[in-house]
Amino acid sequence: MIGGMAPVDLLMAAVAALVLGLCWCLYRVAMLLSGWQVSVAHVWRGGYSDLERLDDFVHMQQSIGTLRGFDIRDGDGTRWIEDEIVFETTEGNRIHAIVGRQVQRSWKPASVFRIWYDRAAPQHVTAYGPGYWSLMALFMLAALYATFAWGMDWARTGQPPQWLAELTAQEVSHK
Image (tube, rainbow, N blue to C red):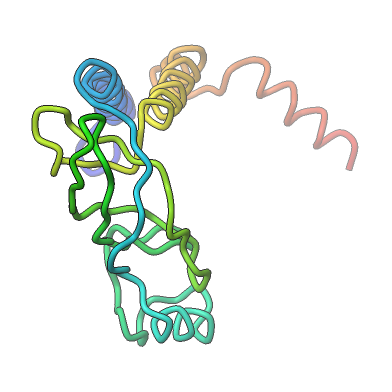
């Protein structure tokens, strides 16, 4: 028991989170393929200045003590930036919008990139297309498969699966 919860309960909570994440990814794929259009965007006003890039280069992988500080959306070695972009719709209208994306820390982000915009409301844009969300859904499915392939019995019985026990036994016997 961990904090009053059995390992099976914790595992089922993780499964529920994976299923919800999978549903969200599939929803995003369906939404982008049904009513959104791809376009090439040009950065009008960048959200990552040269001084911030230099500061990130000096401080390497830490966010504390930098000009930008800590942002929960920053990834490992990446920064979340919001750029003002300009792009043309299929009708030829020139649209300005704000788009968020992750870029490599201390590198100069691309000034031209592909975006997806809502045909009904072109100011709604995203830098993450259906390919990204499909890949995330695939990762969620792989995690669910791994959980159900051997994690459920392990949590219920407390014993690792047979293949894992044999693998560790071989490693111990070679030492």
